[in-house]
Amino acid sequence: MTRVAAIDCGTNSIRLLVTDIDDGGQHDLHREMRVVRLGEGVDRTGSLAAQAIARTRDALDDYAATSRQLQVARTRMVATSASRDADNADDFRAMVHDILGVEPEVISGDEEAALSFAGATRGLHPSEGPFLVMDIGGGSTEVVLGDRAVTAALSVDVGCVRLTERHLHSDPPTDIEVAAAVDDIDAAIQRIQAAVPVEQARTAVGLAGSVTTIAALALGLSSYDRAQIHLSRLTPVEIEKVTTQVLGMTRADRGDLSVMHPGRIDVIGAGALILRTLVDRLALTEVLVSEADILDGIAWSLNA
Image (cartoon, rainbow, N blue to C red; front, side, top):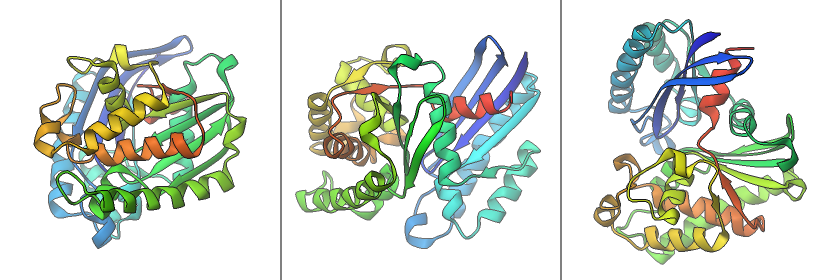
């Protein structure tokens, strides 16, 4: 049995999983998520903002302390969309190494897709495959097809933070802003359809905070409950209802929703819009919601 720490640093959030991995399974000791918005403004400036790096440094200091306390043997940190695109990514990597003692891996979109697929599908029954995994992040969305392994994948620069900063400026967003965002999503979906034979999938799986928050709202939960959300199923009608709801609300009203993490208040509309448009354009009849994702994939990669 190996005790590992997996860290996923995305455009919107940074997450830690400390777990014991062995041939029999995964035994989680600690999960934590903080919204640090590392990708703040990166779509416009091309650089990681100093304040965003500072927020991430604070979270990493705490994650390193937790890992030491739990006597972690191996650590892997994966940094995705924002740090992949930034022109000052070298400075970011140096800061991470100083704190964690390991180099952060600024992975490609294909690597991100493979880790997301591995984490999401490991606990699913093979009879439900082939799987179409949709990982809606802050800066990018990965769409991955596979059974026991990935057969096709594409990462597109459409995520909830990126779309919000590009288009959804009003409170609540205007119809014109929403239409512009949908145009961006449609262009990305055309690329997905050209690269990924989505019609081969038996089960569509949705990952990441936008999807799980939509599921929590559709389920009518009084508080965010990971156990109830994991492996719940969303219909197109439910997704449409929640998307219309959050796009029609002000930020203040969204903040009053009991399941809404404060760091998702301003970007959940864009996240819901991405999911709704994917479901509509790909003619999906249902989305299986998974709380297992790239973080779990990173942990299992340490047992290889």
